[in-house]
Structure formats: structure tokens, C-alpha cells
Length: 338
Image 1 (cartoon, rainbow, N blue to C red):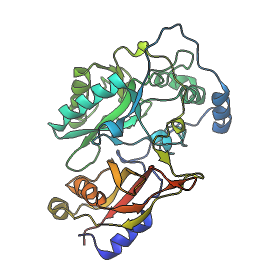
Image 2 (image 1 turned 45 degrees about the horizontal axis):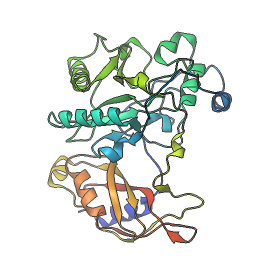
Image 3 (image 1 turned 90 degrees about the vertical axis):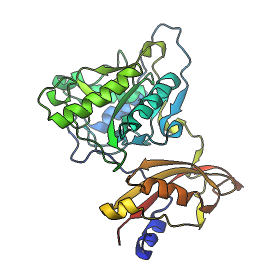
Image 4 (image 1 turned 120 degrees about the vertical axis):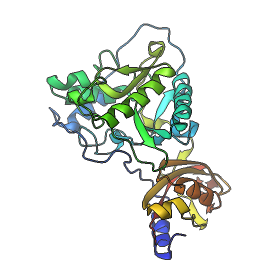
């Protein structure tokens, strides 16, 4: 069981709408933007995506963690841990168009049988962010970013940046380079990596290619789904996708009425696993939690124990205009061996 002191820490942290960076350890690769970021951001928000001849297929975007709770997120662009050194997304979320999302879920299932899961760095990307990237990097680094005049397959909702994590530990595996590292180490055929790094890269590539994803030559983490050109360039920011509601000025935050402490699994105890686990969930209008997803896992049975415990929690529901409504929240659970 979690100790009394630790449980107090959990309650203090519960329901904070904060997303922490998860996944690979170490410092993010950094460049110095060629112009001030505030200036680039303002210009990009006002700019218009290129006009392309249609017709295009209807792009229905699916939120990946709602489609497959085993998919973990490390959305670096929602934090300062990215090559620009500051956030360019308002929210840490990942979306793909339906065919791409369905294919990725099949990839996820195949990797489970090998002991791995998918850790997503980025998926659908609004066009204005692509423009920020292009204008921010020096000319000699533009091979690593998309030209906004052509758009990116990320803008079409059918490209994904990702790596593997070990399902037993929840830790990201070793790869030849860090995410968004703008060096030859990032190339898909880089030969100077360790045997372990090459093996992980090959496992990811085999699984992705088996479901119609195509690797990018200069970024081992980037995969395009087939038929990307069927979809138009989109420029819809994440904050426009607001189902269910997020607690903000017009929506009150749910309050914990009943809580149950998760068990400390035998495997985690034996391995002295400690750390912070993050769950996302929806508290419905009756105060009952549902759609519980692991945003940042610890593995060793702790993820499952946390989900089972939080299912028993009860809340005073959030309200909008005085009426109970479903609200999306996040909970941090702090595990410490005693």
C-alpha cells in the first residue's frame, strides 16, 4: 500500500490540469531560433495555408489515447523540452485521421506481443506550427522541417512521430538519437548506432511498415500513412477540440468526495519502482469517473492498480452555468516504496 504521507501528496496533486513530459531521458536537442518566437508565432497565426486543388476526403480526427489507452504520450511541443525551447501547443494531445489511427492501433497490438508499447511525440499538427518551425530554423537545418508552402503530412492528420516503450517498466527504449535531433544520428539508416539502438529502430520500423506506414529517411521517428494526399491541409488548433469540456473560467473543477488508494504491486515492490503516474479521465455529470487512460505510466502492474483504484473514486461533478457537466481532468499518483 501507499503510505499515509504519500497519499496526502496524491490528494494535493489530484485534478491539476498539468501535463508533464514523459519518455526519453536527457536534454532535448536545441537550436537558437533565427527570430524571436513571439514574432514568429504572431506571424504564423495570421498566415493562411496554401490553397490546394481538391477534392479531398473528409478528415475525421481521432484522439489516440481515447482509441487505445496503451498508447502513451510525450508531446514535447506542449512543453519547453523541444528544439525551440518553448511550447508551441496549448495542449498535450495527439490526433490522427481515422484510417491512420486504426492502422496505428493495429501496430500497437503487434508490439504488445513483443513487450513494447507506442510512445507518441506528435501526430496531427496545425499548419501554423509548421510555419513557425520553418521560419525559426537556420537554412542548414531545413531538411528536418517541412516547407509550409507545401504543407506537412502532419497537417493532414496522417503522420506520426513516435518511439517504443517497454511495457514492463513504462520506460522509453534506447534509440540512435533523441527526438527532433537535427544530426545524421536521426537518419533512418544511420550506421553508427549501438546494436541495441538499431534493434529497437528495426522493431518499430517493421511494425509500422506492416500496417502501411512509410518511414522518413532523415527522421527515424517520423512515419507517414499511405494515401496522405487524400486529405487537405488543416489549421485547427487543439483547443478547438473540446469534447468533453475542460475546466476553465466557465467550467468548475470536479472535487474528490471519495478516494481509494491503489495497491503497490508485488512486482513494483520487489523492483523498488517509484515515481509519478498520470491518468486522464472524464468525470461525468453524476460524479462518476470513466474513460480512464494512462498518460504517463510506471509499468510493473502499477498502471493497472491505479486505474482500478480510480474507478472507485467519486466526485462532486464540475458545473457549467450551474448545471453538472462531464469534465476532462488529469490526476497525478505518486508511488513511493515504504
